[in-house]
Image 1 (cartoon, rainbow, N blue to C red):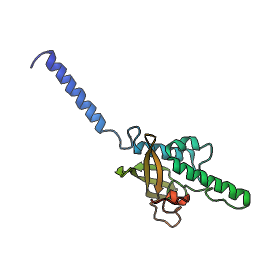
Image 2 (image 1 turned 180 degrees about the horizontal axis):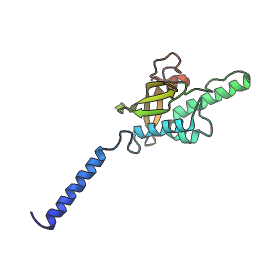
Image 3 (image 1 turned 60 degrees about the vertical axis):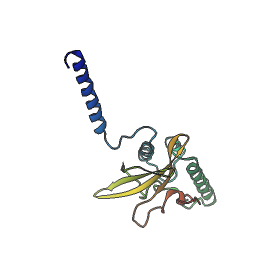
Image 4 (image 1 turned 30 degrees about the vertical axis):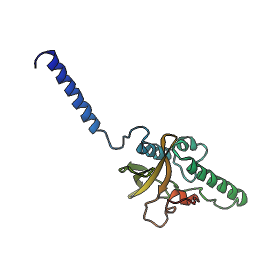
Length: 184
């Protein structure tokens, strides 16, 4: 082959190979829109940026609420009502859900995170999340597992299973801490 056809074919092959190379060199934290990984990245990025401790405040909710299933939002709303009632009945005592990270194993929360390999089980997406928290010379690392379900065509957070191995983690999983009676 000679001439413009060969040159065009060569350019096309070079273009295809450079697109493939660029696609293979993408960092693992980059996810496709509407994927479980994208939802988890948005969720924990918002939590860390807003320094959420305890139940999310009304000001923090707009960044977080669209990423949660309706039933998880209902559990958080019920916990807020419980907290409000406790404060009214016991103004001098510390109410439940007032401080500490509910969305990870560590009370202080995470400073950074990295996603593991997503797996699909039945109608759920399971995403391991490796967290890091540093306080001076001490660094704590742990892995929690986020469980997502499709809702309204998008992957949304349904539960967080705590994987920390220390005594003072909130419990076994977020839904149980919030009082859910459903199975894991």
